[in-house]
Length: 230
Image 1 (tube, rainbow, N blue to C red):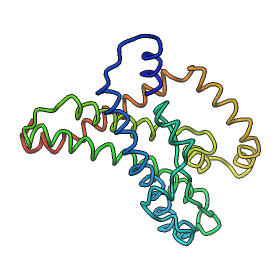
Image 2: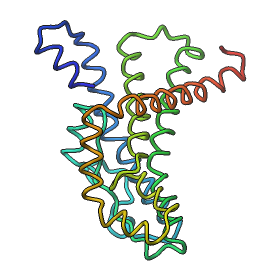
Image 3: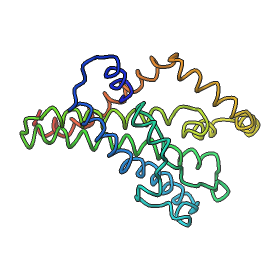
Image 4: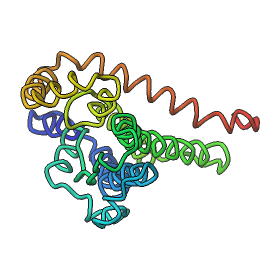
């Protein structure tokens, strides 16, 4: 996280400038290329399930300006997690609102996992196929790119409104429970973010991120293992 590098800098610690530049570039790439993909995936999934609100509002696009959220982007740069401007979704057009909303919601984090996997394929392809001696700059860039994508997927899967995980959870709640869940969502959000920023959930969350990283690495290496390149 950039905030950790800044703390080290202001406290008089040593900072690797190349590492900072690599992480910033990876984060900017995610802000302008992957966050729009995340939102596009929501809109695309909703369209396949009958809701074309994103298309008709001009949000079924990879144009980064359509999804750019300055606060969410700043958070991503500083803390390693953030958000884009959400695409509009209208569950009234779904045949099965709770199920289809959950499927629409899961499409975003899935896009992040796929983006991380694509990064892993390119990274290992350069090593095992291109026989490239990976410069430290590229190593840090790909590591940050994959890590941030997995962290974004895990973060968005947390069952906290308005994150994607809350809509996935909604598919498993009764109508009454779902009503109460959203009735008290402001309180839930306040409590959840106090707990998050207190660090109480750092262990479980980073355990999930590391698990996701391990899965992405395994899947990225798999085709090269199958062809005997590893």
